[in-house]
Amino acid sequence: MPHSCLSFQRPSFDVKLQENEAKKLLKEHGLTVPQRGLDGDKEYVVKAQVLANHRKENGGIKFAKGEKQAKALEKEIKGTQLEGQDIQDVLIEEKIDFQEEYYVSFTYDTETRKPALIFSKEGGTGIENREVSKLPLEDTSQFRFRQFLAENGFEGKEIIKLGMELQKLFEAFLEADGRLLEINPLAKTDDGYVILDAMMDLDDDASYRHSWDYPERSAFDREKTSREIRAKKIDENDHRGVAGKYTELEGDIGMMLAGGGASLTNMDALIACGGKPANYTEYGGNPPTEKVYKLSKVIMSKELNGLWHVGGTANNTDVLRTMKGFVQALEEEKPDYPIVIRRDGPNADEAFELLREKKEELDLNMKLFRNDTPMTETAETLMEMVEAFKEDEK
Image (cartoon, rainbow, N blue to C red; front, side, top):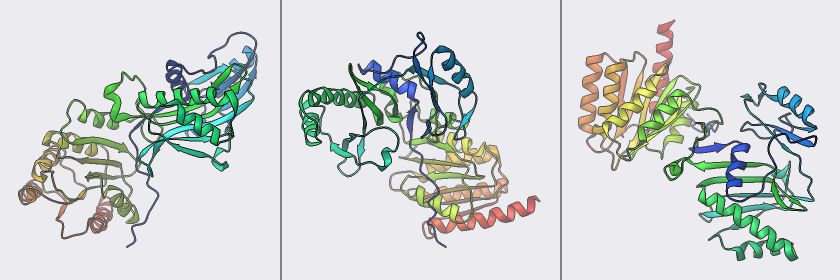
């Protein structure tokens, strides 16, 4: 059976900022953004604050002449939806006249394994179809930015002025522990450069270095669910292994994925077999029993029709230690839906003896596999059990 489904995108674990939040952060780093709020009878831009692309084309960005019209547009936009997201907040700021608009972003380049500047002399909508230049970055020195701008056709004082702006943006990206900073457009005005729109993703793993107070958002651009928030707390103040990476999905098959290396393959295998994951998660790095127990409880707290606990052969993770946490959750939840476990590694003999005991004791609908059975094959076994379970439930 082919396991090539590409419909699942592995969630990243970033803190995704809305435009108003990103602009506030950049302003704190000395960068210029339009004045926010109403201040007399001037022209304004009224923007829906949602994490969505193409806001302007979808009616999420409108222009107003005067305070009265701006307020009317705010009322018109607020409370509606854009790409399925509720618009709860609207940003009103002054409309800026500009001469040129550039596209600027900073991210990490997988080819060079360094941060990189992505730049285009033509910003604004449709940037996906325009030519861009990339500059891998070693440090925040001014020289390399100026050299890059000269290579891209800039001349005279603009090389110095724009180079300083790029340097400040890069410093803000590094100091904030950004994974992505996208400015589109960066506008050139008579008074300097102004950030007209900004998108920023922060590295959640670096949150301990900052006093962030942003709303909890998932990798799918929505507010985090209560389960996602519970799972995140598992790793807080406890750095023994990882067990708090949980993203809730819409399916009915609980996923207990051990180790990250094969997780995507296993997700694809389940989908190819007709299963719909209820969540994406990973645990690894030899987490203690109590952390695996807490993660198991989060996964089992959702209404499920099956549970797949799957992972390769562990090198450093004590399988018995982690399975004790899983078993503790089974003892409390006593699920009646099918469960398939495929795991191996240190102390697996003892772990599987424990699982067999609990299967009998709790009368669980559970099948166990070691590393002599391919991981993806056990997805097919689980889905056969799930189909039988659903038939019995009718």
